[in-house]
Length: 239
Image (cartoon, rainbow, N blue to C red):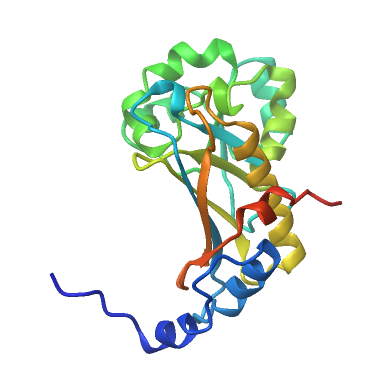
């Protein structure tokens, strides 16, 4: 099988990346310096773990409210009726599901980013699992997307303020965006701290010993930069 060919741009920047892990501050700085594509590249963290996701008690799925928005347009759809529907509309939800919208979703329409639902609507939502599930749009109490009507306003605001879902893949890795090249180092470090704190706090019960095995930071089109784990563990979210 032929080896993957990299662009001249990539080969140029990869020579600046140390082979050994660097501290989080240096990794963030390097990830921005090596983001040399002609667009505002996203900056990503990739975390490898010692979990075995084949076992339910070793899986991780959490939601992180990042201190700094990712700069994306996030459209929010809410399954609610009555008072909940009124609250959702006043809080600025992009879509509040009625019968017409329900028919569109059943037909395959999924033109939004975050789904929220009140508990009484979950039987209705459950019938849409074939459409919502594969696209990651199914509301779930575990990731704070099934909430009481009086919590809808804050849930809608959180969805728009850099909400990141962490879900372990089949290789026991976690992937998340922490911002873009145009962010400051401090903003990226704050978002990184929020993500790593959540990962550390959410170690699955079935994992014995050390949970995180390694971490790599990179821009969307740049090389991976290995991050020293103690420096990640010492990060805190600042005001």
